[in-house]
Amino acid sequence: MKELTFNLPELPYAVEEAMNRLRINIKFCGNDTKKILLTSCLPNEGKSTVAVFLWKMLAEAGFPTVFVDVDLRNSLIRKRFDVNYDEETSGLNHYLSGMAEYEDVVYKTNIPNGYTVPCTQLLENPSPLLEDARFKQLLDKLAEEYRFVIIDSPPLGSVADSTLVASICDGAVLVVRAGATSKTLIRQSLHEIEQSGCKILGSVLNRVDVKSKKYGKYGKYGKYGAYGYGYGQHAEENNEK
Image (tube, rainbow, N blue to C red; front, side, top):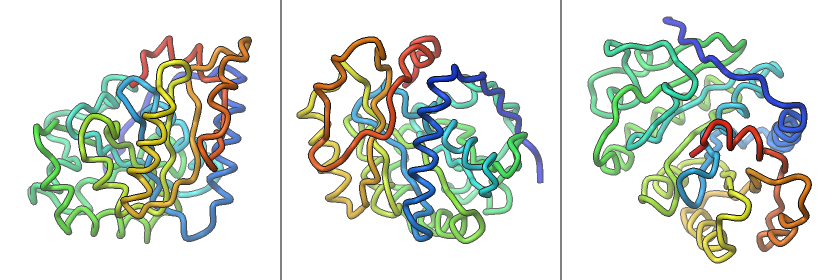
């Protein structure tokens, strides 16, 4: 199995502690919660970085974990984390198109217990492929072989892809950018996830100015609490989506 390398920056202490709280909460969601979707309301809210570091921390904690890049329209994972694959590397796009099989698209990484199914080529309209039974079969097989399957999908407010993916996941985490995303849009996104039949595990409030109390206005999103605060500085430096 070919190994892919992720070059992940070291997190500031406060950010790492917030991510650890998220990891612990995910761990206690139950043994049946394996396929976990990370999504957001809009682009540039930080979901991809939260997804990658959650994957890393779960893997380093001893849980075999696979990261699946389902942002087939606008994936920035390779560029952001300098992942070392080339044009000959098969990814999720090849699998969904029938050009590769399961064993061709699952890779070891430099993260202990960390595996990945990358997106190696962007697609203009992946929705029909995500609706195909082949995609569900992939996620189900990954869930059999790994303790956690962390899935990074497009924002809910941009395209319908996230709702399609959510319908075959065990749970979802909504990443929200503090001070930029309205309560109305948050409620709408939560409703879309619920309508898909996916359980909402919680939310991450991202890009928070920890010196300010303004984030308190978000409080509770209905009955859903925020898992962590304090991603502000790191997220701004990396221009998260």
